[in-house]
Length: 275
Image (cartoon, rainbow, N blue to C red; front, side, top):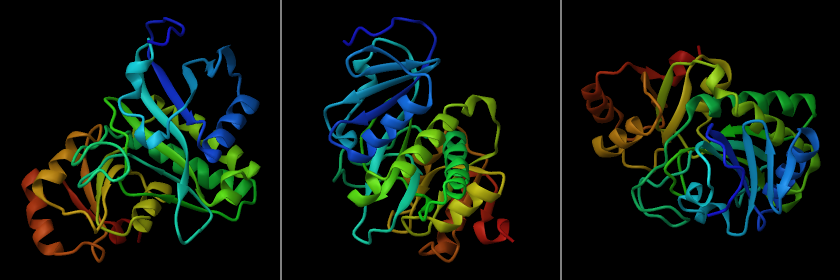
């Protein structure tokens, strides 16, 4: 156990991997912009936020909360995002695997989502992008990769190549947005699970940015939208008031809609909400 400050009140655990250029960039800006006090090597504290640097890559930090001798409510990984397309991006999502565990986590296991925090993070990323004049796309991602944890968990990322990972303005934008996400307990939004669309779930992103719903887990079109997978998403969504579908981006959508009706929750087409 790491004997950090032993206090009973719950904390937001912010983690950055030393292997991760973007994570270290974001963490640097957290310590520069906010009142983080160094309490020991690799550990900083600011009010109800505890920042730690870890050795392993974030996607493999399984049940990392057990390494800290304190009560943790919410884990935020400050991280890089990689893509072959190389689009400069600022992203947020919940980790988990609906299928195989190719990059950390466990097969067919997903983390607990924090839809409100994700909404706050994305909206602030959009604000920071505009204020800092950043030529980056702001996007929610579908649920993917590890690690698996036992707490509410979110990734907030800079993508997609080294040039962006080390961009100082991007580091600042994500640091400010990350801290905004830690205020999630002050806000109440209707919560939803997203269905369909591509990995960068554009319609769900627009709902998050411009409409009232906060979306937690998203099952992209490459994930089998089975009753089992949807049940997992609902149970680990921190509450679910509705399903929001990218209708055109949902394979076998009529059968999916029929199955979703068994959950007795409202079903909205994202396109309808965005009119």
